[in-house]
Image 1: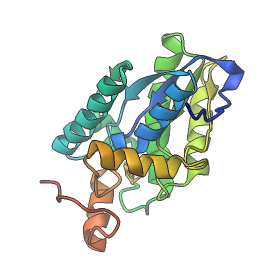
Image 2: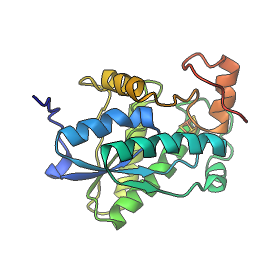
Image 3: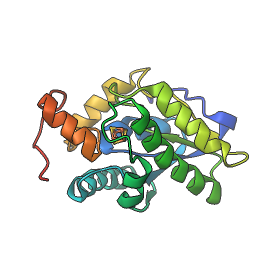
Length: 207
Ligand code: SF4
């Protein structure tokens, strides 16, 4: 028997654009959406990820899972220079600070534009899945992005609850996903180095 999750997508839409940061954070969302009869399209826009090898590695894992689940994958630009420009002056901010707000706004702003231009009424993101993230901060960025496009709705679902965290861990293990050891940008990498990578296991990325 299928276990439905009774997700309450806004406006009872049947499809959603899912901004995706990485495979571990998005796998459970994808699985739950499909189980509940909602069609996700994966949108990969993460110019924050540094270095390029790390970006390619994370993206390849998302593509692998999207192909396995037979859902569309949209590959957006890796425009890292504009990202560095966007967060300039905030290099030393702590995680969850203003740099992260700017980072979320840039990524979700582009996702919102794609959604509006390609017939999606609802978009959401995997950015708030990790317990290291401030979900309210992510949701504020999503709402702000949606506000630029009349009729577009940001779905501020808490994907951690209702077994989401456990499902994420289980699928990640089953799929043997690459598990990154830092949030993504150069500055979070440096900070993780200072802390000795306490939160993840795996190989240190080559810089
Ligand atoms: S720590 Fe993460 S969310 Fe914050 S700016 Fe860096 S990549 Fe973006």
